Image (cartoon, rainbow, N blue to C red; front, top):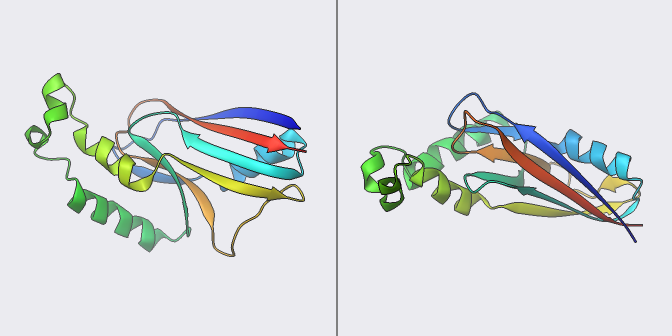
Length: 139
């Protein structure tokens, strides 16, 4: 069995945002030489997420509005976490809702997806550099 590791770096220019990283993940699979196995993709920061869904702008706007209703950024004083001097208590909760990671099967060197599935990086406390890990194992 072989394994391959790659990191992606992001610095989203806004507090929140979603980036389709499917092409980057497939590129890592191509680089790995693995044709059958599993691919783990995870956010390496506690205020960012990796998830799978449709690449449709209306859906992304719906996510943004829905998450802001569930865990609004303001007032920042509503979060105990922000008493540490941070202002990102909401971002931790949003990450928990959207998830840390995805695992996708690799079949014949390709992500083994449903028709509309794509992998996204979700940022909830942007404006600084963060990383995503891609780890592929298989043959």
